[in-house]
Length: 409
Image (cartoon, rainbow, N blue to C red; front, top):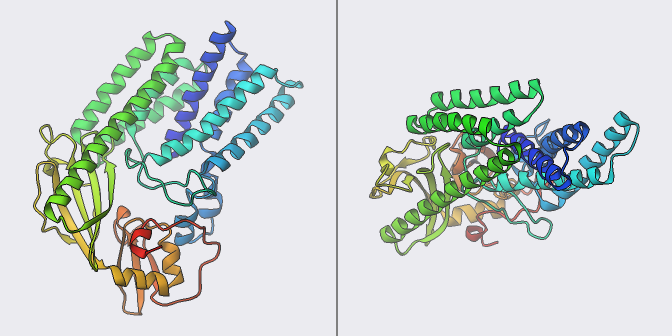
């Protein structure tokens, strides 16, 4: 999930904590508590992305793929991060106030930062990129496959509530700019359909009107509730899309093994999904891309927008489309070729500890261009590896390859 969304989540949780504390104490918390809660919660909601410090500076593409959303995106490290931010907040409080915070202030802040830090993991889990929630006890990737990596509905249902609740003019301006920018992009970005952009704009107007009428406590609870509802709606639609895809795959090729179905909703759209299926049948390994409609009677799959190209490596699909599933492209390879590459090339095996939908092609210099079809070909996930090499990259994490089912690991 993008860091703007994580920051908004941190602010929503902080406002909810302020309102809950005020209700329990029958008195408003101090301005100092409110300010520290908002700032530290926003930081805590982003702290798992601290891995960008060492993956985004001086690291190569493979290092980024292996380490981003790695060790810091775990429950264990989220707890450590929350504790460190809490300690820093206590030190700043003592310095600014020349006195320790009240015990209740410290306790409420500790609980808030714990929830805010863990919220980052939950939000990142909802999309198809993946996290390792329970490392070091479990090194598998975990995918929610339910929410696009930037979901503007989260901004629409929460930003107006935050604007109405804050007493800071600077915060009001910044939050308003975030919402306006999100709506403007929705009308300009091809990934967002005209209908979805219209619904977003209408939703923003309704959210603004509600924020002006609701009481502070109801605003905070309403923003969080609406956020959860958006997630559940998208998750339900993604589940329906996955079921439709699996049903069509079984009918078309009952002898093939379905290894994976990657579902990514289009942004701001609970009907149209981008789907990638991974199958094997004997030595044949097949990757197919499709547009899937969770409500074909409303919007047939053929009318759903295309999430993104897969590049020239893929060919047009020969599968028969249905109102629910519109097949776009196919790629086939050899299971033996992939297992041989993983066995004989240590850099390839390292890349396969991240790549969920591997596709590949041989290059003229006996190297292999290896891609993850989730991100197209020739783009973010492309790594060129030697076909045979015992020279392993440095500091390869112990992640179990997503396609361990093919590699026999």
